[in-house]
Amino acid sequence: MSGNVRLLNDTLAAAKAEGRSALIAYLPAGFPTVDGGIEAIRAALDGGADVVEVGLPHSDPVLDGPVIQTADDIALRGGVRIADVMRTVREAHEATGKPILVMTYWNPIDRYGVERFTAELAEAGGAGCILPDLPVQESALWREHADKHGLATVFVVAPSSKDARLAEITAAGSGFVYAASLMGVTGTRESVGSQAEDLVRRTRATTDIPVCVGLGVSTPAQAAEVAGFADGVIVGSAFVKRMLDAPDHAAGVEAVRALAGDLAKGVRGQA
Image (cartoon, rainbow, N blue to C red; front, side, top):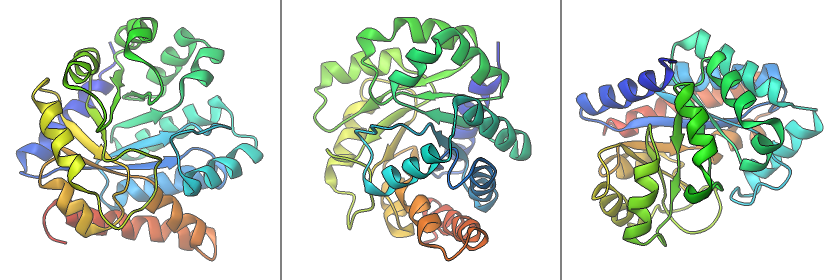
């Protein structure tokens, strides 16, 4: 069995032991290029992220806002393939020793083949997958192969999830639970809102695995706020926006590194 899910568990436990939340960064593979994406992910990890989610670009990313859609479009027009996603995971993990997950919609895995995808992800050193649109009741095949290869299965819960549904989702998941802070798509927002704290409280009542909050966190102050009640703080659009807004690639990579450092201070209460 792969030890990569263990690395994820240990990383989250170590952050908790330090009395802080983990910082989880999201960046899509192949953006702006495959090599450039790997460089940006390494910068996020070197800057202070504990874990990275590598996005698998999708032509219809229903849960992603305009910033991530723009990055996905750039990656897809550049010809990114699942093999490039696996290479991104491998090189980021080998360079930093930190846990790397893939965040993907279900359709690309279904087309690629569940056994092939899980085997290749484990071989690349991946820690698991976040599957925002895979219903728990349809996840048995995925979980069978993920378990076989030592991969975490991270499901997403939302403020609209009823308590019984939360219990069903958390019982099937592993690694951590992704708590969407609000209804809607990804993107930076002025405030994270009280819904997130209530959702974390209700989710924790059903499980012992860490609960990490994403959607809308973009500043060190917001990271500090969420770190006050969640086991992990997930930041995506803010990193992607730094890359999109930079005058050139090198500046974008440095902006990612700097943001990771600022957010890492935020989750430590130093913002």
